[in-house]
Image (cartoon, rainbow, N blue to C red; front, side):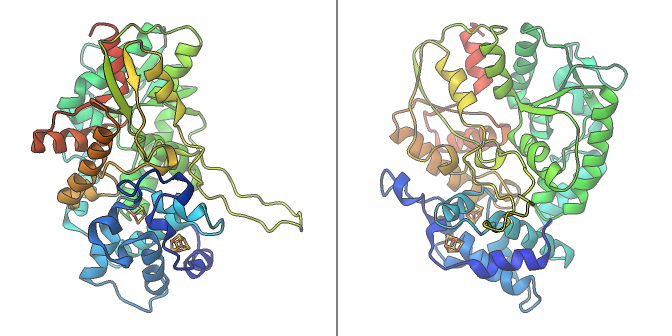
Length: 422
Ligand code: SF4
Ligand code: SF4
């Protein structure tokens, strides 16, 4: 990660303009859905915003203030959704908010200011290689009878990485199994690591346990290289972000192409290798997962040239190069589905609420954030909210079940399966 001197220019550069609380002006469609930061919207105090956290970090990272319980609340009641970064960069091109937020969490962890719920997750990751506190031996159960190639003993072309949530969440099991069936239908030579698959480590990194991710990455990269795979496909947006951004940013190279399952499905449809059927008439809206959308932007090295007319710039995620069109292309290619858009979409999306360790430590805040998104889907006239991330799906499903809401929730694969009559 960046050193203190680099972070310093971000922290001191904040002009206290508060744009990081709002959708950029030109993109606002209504007052009701004009806000972009769940943290400051929920807790209504400047310190919870991206800019507020920059000010706190400026003092804490230099050791001029201490982390206290109220500071911990501010640091961790944040989904690390990246929306503040995108809004800030609509006006400023020289601040990397995301890096500062990550550094602040790492500092808290180094100094022992940790949340018990996060510690539980880290213990589970160390002991059972997953974020959900379940047995490692059960990790491959989801793939029972699918006859996936075992990459621990055979070489494969394409490696399927299910991720922790899809491996263990029984409610979402049919989705992950259907992704495998879909790629099989397209003739893809697909393998998986079964019980040997482990967490990508991205969640640990975001919660401030940066060293933990390195351990998982080394393990993961060793297994990928031994498999001979040329392509890694994952249906989990969190894992996607970790492989595509966090690993390379931290100098770890898996040496293969990485695609999210919806990107791969879109590609196979365009190549004529995958045919979709028809769905019963349904009006749907697509929720961009933060880690596939604005935070799914690939990591690129900063410009390092000598052109004196331009100052060297570090690479920052602008958000607009994330994965936005492939899921929409897939949805639009299914006759019967009517795709309507919410007000906050693509890099300006509202978070589902689950990220940054919020679902684990502050489920009430995750639920509040998810409900705001469901409200937005309803305002768009949608009967169903569709996403491409098991974490978003989980938090939406739970919010809907708790509130007795008629809104339906699907993963893109569920719509594809429905189009085949499944
Ligand atoms: S972080 Fe950026 S958008 Fe937010 S107050 Fe500071 S300069 Fe303004
Ligand atoms: S990362 Fe998201 S929740 Fe956290 S301060 Fe930025 S916009 Fe708010």
